[in-house]
Amino acid sequence: MKVEICSYSHYRIHPGHGKRYVRLDSRSFVFITRKAEKAFLNKCNPRRTRWTVIYRRMNKKGISEETSRKRNRKTKKFFRGVVGASAEVVRAKRNQAPELREAQRNAAIKEAKEKSRARKEALKAQGAAASQQKTFAKTVRAPKFMATSR
Amino acid sequence: MITFLTNLKIADNTGVLNVQCIKVLGGHKMRVAISGKPIVTALKKVRPRKKFKKGEVAKVLVLSTKNRFRRNSGFIINSNKNTGLILNDGFAPVANRVTGAVPHEVRAKYNRGYLLTRKNY
Image (cartoon, rainbow over all chains, first blue to last red):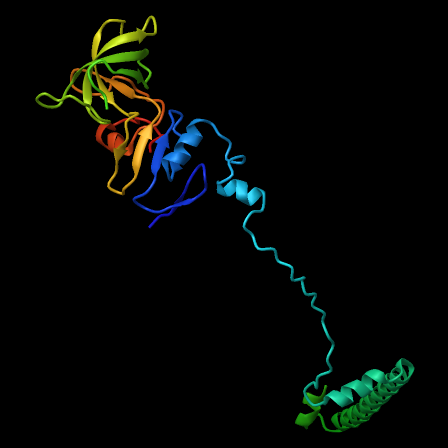
Protein backbone atom coordinates (compact mmCIF):
# COMPACT_ATOMS: atom_id res chain seq x y z
CA MET A 1 0.00 0.00 0.00
CA LYS A 2 1.49 3.27 -1.08
CA VAL A 3 0.34 6.43 0.66
CA GLU A 4 1.00 9.53 -1.39
CA ILE A 5 1.09 13.15 -0.36
CA CYS A 6 -1.07 15.88 -1.88
CA SER A 7 1.00 18.30 -3.97
CA TYR A 8 -0.96 21.28 -2.71
CA SER A 9 -2.20 20.61 0.80
CA HIS A 10 0.33 17.93 1.84
CA TYR A 11 -2.45 15.74 3.14
CA ARG A 12 -1.90 12.02 2.98
CA ILE A 13 -3.67 10.22 0.13
CA HIS A 14 -4.61 6.61 0.56
CA PRO A 15 -5.17 4.27 -2.41
CA GLY A 16 -8.46 4.77 -4.19
CA HIS A 17 -8.52 8.47 -3.40
CA GLY A 18 -7.16 11.51 -5.12
CA LYS A 19 -6.42 12.54 -8.62
CA ARG A 20 -3.21 12.78 -10.59
CA TYR A 21 -2.64 15.68 -12.93
CA VAL A 22 0.09 15.41 -15.57
CA ARG A 23 1.46 18.55 -17.10
CA LEU A 24 2.84 18.46 -20.61
CA ASP A 25 6.35 18.89 -19.23
CA SER A 26 5.70 15.44 -17.70
CA ARG A 27 5.62 16.68 -14.11
CA SER A 28 2.79 14.95 -12.32
CA PHE A 29 0.92 16.31 -9.31
CA VAL A 30 -1.36 14.47 -6.94
CA PHE A 31 -4.37 16.09 -5.33
CA ILE A 32 -6.55 14.76 -2.58
CA THR A 33 -9.65 16.85 -3.35
CA ARG A 34 -11.11 19.04 -6.03
CA LYS A 35 -10.57 21.98 -3.69
CA ALA A 36 -6.83 21.36 -3.61
CA GLU A 37 -6.73 20.81 -7.36
CA LYS A 38 -8.62 24.02 -8.13
CA ALA A 39 -6.43 26.03 -5.79
CA PHE A 40 -3.36 24.62 -7.50
CA LEU A 41 -4.68 25.38 -10.98
CA ASN A 42 -5.53 28.93 -9.87
CA LYS A 43 -1.89 29.22 -8.80
CA CYS A 44 -2.72 29.94 -5.18
CA ASN A 45 0.28 29.80 -2.94
CA PRO A 46 -0.14 26.98 -0.39
CA ARG A 47 1.98 28.98 2.05
CA ARG A 48 -0.74 31.62 2.17
CA THR A 49 -3.73 29.27 2.17
CA ARG A 50 -4.66 28.83 5.79
CA TRP A 51 -5.83 25.25 5.80
CA THR A 52 -2.81 23.62 4.15
CA VAL A 53 -0.26 21.68 6.12
CA ILE A 54 2.51 23.95 4.85
CA TYR A 55 0.84 27.08 6.22
CA ARG A 56 0.16 25.47 9.58
CA ARG A 57 3.67 24.16 9.81
CA MET A 58 5.12 27.54 8.86
CA ASN A 59 3.04 29.46 11.36
CA LYS A 60 3.29 26.83 14.09
CA LYS A 61 -0.39 26.12 14.45
CA GLY A 62 -1.72 23.23 16.47
CA ILE A 63 1.59 22.25 18.01
CA SER A 64 1.45 21.92 21.79
CA GLU A 65 4.27 23.94 23.25
CA GLU A 66 6.88 21.97 25.03
CA THR A 67 7.85 23.81 28.18
CA SER A 68 10.03 21.11 29.67
CA ARG A 69 13.63 22.10 29.63
CA LYS A 70 16.37 19.98 28.30
CA ARG A 71 18.07 18.02 30.99
CA ASN A 72 21.81 18.27 31.06
CA ARG A 73 23.54 15.06 31.84
CA LYS A 74 26.72 15.15 33.87
CA THR A 75 29.20 12.35 34.12
CA LYS A 76 30.02 11.26 37.64
CA LYS A 77 33.22 9.59 38.66
CA PHE A 78 33.12 6.32 40.56
CA PHE A 79 35.91 4.29 42.04
CA ARG A 80 35.50 0.70 41.25
CA GLY A 81 37.57 -2.26 42.27
CA VAL A 82 39.98 -3.53 39.63
CA VAL A 83 40.71 -7.24 39.47
CA GLY A 84 42.44 -7.93 42.84
CA ALA A 85 42.30 -4.44 44.33
CA SER A 86 39.12 -3.26 45.99
CA ALA A 87 37.73 0.25 45.63
CA GLU A 88 39.30 1.42 48.90
CA VAL A 89 42.78 0.23 47.97
CA VAL A 90 42.56 2.05 44.67
CA ARG A 91 41.38 5.21 46.37
CA ALA A 92 44.19 5.03 48.92
CA LYS A 93 46.75 4.67 46.15
CA ARG A 94 45.28 7.61 44.31
CA ASN A 95 45.44 9.80 47.38
CA GLN A 96 49.16 9.11 47.94
CA ALA A 97 51.52 11.99 47.29
CA PRO A 98 53.16 11.83 43.88
CA GLU A 99 56.68 12.12 45.34
CA LEU A 100 56.15 9.16 47.55
CA ARG A 101 54.94 7.11 44.62
CA GLU A 102 57.93 8.11 42.55
CA ALA A 103 60.32 7.19 45.34
CA GLN A 104 58.66 3.81 45.60
CA ARG A 105 58.94 3.28 41.90
CA ASN A 106 62.65 4.22 41.85
CA ALA A 107 63.37 1.89 44.72
CA ALA A 108 61.61 -0.93 42.92
CA ILE A 109 63.62 -0.25 39.76
CA LYS A 110 66.85 -0.20 41.66
CA GLU A 111 66.06 -3.48 43.34
CA ALA A 112 65.16 -5.13 40.04
CA LYS A 113 68.40 -3.93 38.44
CA GLU A 114 70.49 -5.28 41.25
CA LYS A 115 68.75 -8.59 41.02
CA SER A 116 69.43 -8.93 37.32
CA ARG A 117 73.05 -7.93 37.77
CA ALA A 118 73.57 -10.56 40.45
CA ARG A 119 71.99 -13.17 38.19
CA LYS A 120 74.27 -12.27 35.31
CA GLU A 121 77.35 -12.53 37.52
CA ALA A 122 76.33 -15.91 38.73
CA LEU A 123 75.91 -17.06 35.14
CA LYS A 124 79.32 -15.75 34.23
CA ALA A 125 80.95 -17.64 37.07
CA GLN A 126 79.23 -20.80 35.97
CA GLY A 127 80.33 -20.29 32.36
CA ALA A 128 83.95 -19.84 33.40
CA ALA A 129 83.84 -23.09 35.34
CA ALA A 130 82.38 -24.90 32.35
CA SER A 131 85.08 -23.60 29.98
CA GLN A 132 87.73 -24.80 32.40
CA GLN A 133 86.17 -28.23 32.33
CA LYS A 134 86.15 -28.18 28.53
CA THR A 135 89.86 -27.48 28.33
CA PHE A 136 90.55 -30.49 30.43
CA ALA A 137 88.27 -32.97 28.76
CA LYS A 138 87.17 -32.01 25.23
CA THR A 139 85.15 -35.14 24.71
CA VAL A 140 82.90 -34.41 27.64
CA ARG A 141 79.81 -32.63 26.52
CA ALA A 142 78.59 -29.55 28.22
CA PRO A 143 75.66 -30.24 30.52
CA LYS A 144 72.31 -29.49 29.11
CA PHE A 145 71.26 -26.73 31.50
CA MET A 146 74.21 -24.66 30.21
CA ALA A 147 72.87 -24.68 26.70
CA THR A 148 69.45 -23.51 27.76
CA SER A 149 70.66 -20.79 30.10
CA ARG A 150 72.46 -18.74 27.44
CA MET B 1 -12.23 12.34 -24.63
CA ILE B 2 -11.34 13.00 -28.26
CA THR B 3 -14.35 13.40 -30.54
CA PHE B 4 -15.10 14.74 -34.00
CA LEU B 5 -13.54 18.25 -34.36
CA THR B 6 -11.40 18.06 -31.24
CA ASN B 7 -8.09 19.88 -31.61
CA LEU B 8 -4.95 18.09 -30.53
CA LYS B 9 -1.28 18.95 -30.23
CA ILE B 10 1.25 16.66 -31.82
CA ALA B 11 4.06 15.67 -29.47
CA ASP B 12 6.63 14.28 -31.90
CA ASN B 13 9.26 15.52 -34.35
CA THR B 14 7.36 15.16 -37.61
CA GLY B 15 6.87 18.93 -37.83
CA VAL B 16 3.11 18.77 -37.38
CA LEU B 17 1.94 21.06 -34.60
CA ASN B 18 -1.85 21.04 -34.44
CA VAL B 19 -4.41 18.65 -35.84
CA GLN B 20 -8.18 18.28 -35.75
CA CYS B 21 -9.96 15.00 -35.30
CA ILE B 22 -12.22 14.10 -38.21
CA LYS B 23 -12.94 10.47 -37.39
CA VAL B 24 -12.58 8.17 -34.44
CA LEU B 25 -11.38 4.72 -35.41
CA GLY B 26 -11.64 1.38 -33.71
CA GLY B 27 -15.22 0.19 -33.95
CA HIS B 28 -18.64 0.66 -35.38
CA LYS B 29 -20.00 4.11 -34.55
CA MET B 30 -17.11 4.82 -32.20
CA ARG B 31 -17.66 8.35 -30.97
CA VAL B 32 -14.97 8.96 -28.38
CA ALA B 33 -11.27 8.16 -28.39
CA ILE B 34 -9.25 7.84 -25.20
CA SER B 35 -5.47 7.64 -24.85
CA GLY B 36 -4.01 4.74 -26.79
CA LYS B 37 -6.70 4.82 -29.51
CA PRO B 38 -6.17 5.81 -33.16
CA ILE B 39 -8.08 8.62 -34.88
CA VAL B 40 -8.06 10.26 -38.30
CA THR B 41 -7.11 13.93 -38.34
CA ALA B 42 -6.73 16.91 -40.61
CA LEU B 43 -3.38 18.64 -40.24
CA LYS B 44 -4.04 22.25 -39.27
CA LYS B 45 -0.68 23.72 -38.44
CA VAL B 46 2.55 22.32 -39.85
CA ARG B 47 6.14 23.50 -39.83
CA PRO B 48 7.41 24.29 -43.35
CA ARG B 49 9.72 22.03 -45.34
CA LYS B 50 8.77 18.88 -43.51
CA LYS B 51 7.27 15.53 -44.45
CA PHE B 52 3.67 16.67 -43.99
CA LYS B 53 1.72 19.62 -45.33
CA LYS B 54 -1.17 21.61 -44.00
CA GLY B 55 -4.53 20.22 -45.05
CA GLU B 56 -3.38 16.65 -45.39
CA VAL B 57 -5.08 13.78 -43.62
CA ALA B 58 -3.15 11.56 -41.26
CA LYS B 59 -3.82 8.96 -38.61
CA VAL B 60 -2.95 9.91 -35.08
CA LEU B 61 -2.51 7.94 -31.90
CA VAL B 62 -3.97 9.69 -28.87
CA LEU B 63 -1.39 9.92 -26.08
CA SER B 64 -2.68 12.04 -23.22
CA THR B 65 -6.09 13.62 -22.73
CA LYS B 66 -7.55 16.36 -20.64
CA ASN B 67 -10.36 14.06 -19.75
CA ARG B 68 -9.49 11.87 -16.81
CA PHE B 69 -9.20 8.12 -16.91
CA ARG B 70 -9.04 5.60 -14.15
CA ARG B 71 -6.39 3.03 -13.46
CA ASN B 72 -6.96 -0.28 -11.72
CA SER B 73 -5.04 1.03 -8.75
CA GLY B 74 -7.87 3.49 -8.20
CA PHE B 75 -6.06 6.56 -9.32
CA ILE B 76 -7.71 9.05 -11.61
CA ILE B 77 -5.31 10.69 -14.04
CA ASN B 78 -5.57 13.59 -16.41
CA SER B 79 -3.27 15.83 -18.36
CA ASN B 80 -3.40 19.50 -19.23
CA LYS B 81 -3.23 18.95 -22.99
CA ASN B 82 -4.70 16.68 -25.60
CA THR B 83 -1.69 15.28 -27.39
CA GLY B 84 -1.13 12.76 -30.13
CA LEU B 85 1.43 11.05 -32.28
CA ILE B 86 1.34 10.75 -36.09
CA LEU B 87 0.93 7.22 -37.44
CA ASN B 88 1.38 5.90 -40.95
CA ASP B 89 -1.22 3.81 -42.77
CA GLY B 90 0.09 0.68 -41.07
CA PHE B 91 -0.54 2.26 -37.65
CA ALA B 92 3.18 2.52 -36.92
CA PRO B 93 4.64 5.78 -35.54
CA VAL B 94 6.27 7.96 -38.19
CA ALA B 95 8.46 10.02 -35.91
CA ASN B 96 11.58 8.79 -34.24
CA ARG B 97 11.18 10.89 -31.14
CA VAL B 98 8.29 11.85 -28.89
CA THR B 99 8.34 14.78 -26.51
CA GLY B 100 6.40 15.05 -23.32
CA ALA B 101 4.82 12.52 -21.08
CA VAL B 102 3.10 9.34 -22.25
CA PRO B 103 0.94 7.01 -20.16
CA HIS B 104 2.73 3.75 -19.63
CA GLU B 105 -0.16 1.77 -21.08
CA VAL B 106 0.33 3.48 -24.47
CA ARG B 107 4.07 3.16 -24.22
CA ALA B 108 3.84 -0.58 -23.61
CA LYS B 109 1.55 -0.95 -26.60
CA TYR B 110 3.34 1.22 -29.12
CA ASN B 111 7.01 1.05 -28.21
CA ARG B 112 7.89 -0.89 -31.31
CA GLY B 113 11.60 -1.41 -31.41
CA TYR B 114 12.59 2.15 -30.67
CA LEU B 115 12.34 4.55 -27.83
CA LEU B 116 9.01 6.29 -27.72
CA THR B 117 9.84 8.61 -24.87
CA ARG B 118 11.64 8.36 -21.64
CA LYS B 119 9.02 10.31 -19.79
CA ASN B 120 6.01 8.27 -18.96
CA TYR B 121 3.46 8.31 -16.19
